[in-house]
Length: 258
Image 1 (cartoon, rainbow, N blue to C red):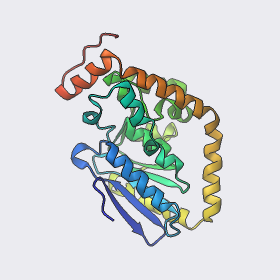
Image 2: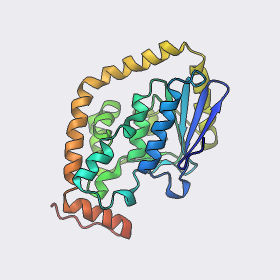
Image 3: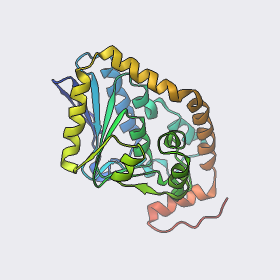
Image 4: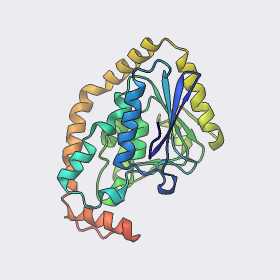
């Protein structure tokens, strides 16, 4: 089967590779791409030939965030329908392990997807961040809830409130990645992990993943609800409109606090 926004390939060593395929847009996450990802993962759920998935992007970007052009005219209701959507949680809800192979940029929604993955390999020139504040909004696909549990509150505050990005060494030190390596080795390393996982007892791997995720979910459910409510609210503000408009017009935004 062919896809508009993804490249999908099964490997006979027991895993599948899924690649975001909008390189000219730095793999900006449009709804069509997310829907395709959800469909692909759903298809792999009961495929015994796929015991792990490697998720990757292009050389310049894993995914540089949500597609701003798609969000420009969103109302608060539109934002809720778009982000409070099962497609944004397809990775987390997938029973089998997913390994992110990240080169270049993983920003905004891109990093939010990375944080849902079970293992992460990054390139030595990677840039990880949640810069939504520069657009007058906050992360809307789980970033405010997942990041503090990984890197701790102080750094999460700096990343979310001030748009700080992390490099490869910082990603390792703060627990956002398992391994860092040269860019041309990232995919091979991620695939080697997938091969190892494919050799493990599949039920034990699936149950292990479920149990680890369960350790985080009890407070996450409430936190995601709070995040969604406040994220949707921001789509009714003048600053959100100004942030998006300034981004498209390639100028500095003028914040009004309204």
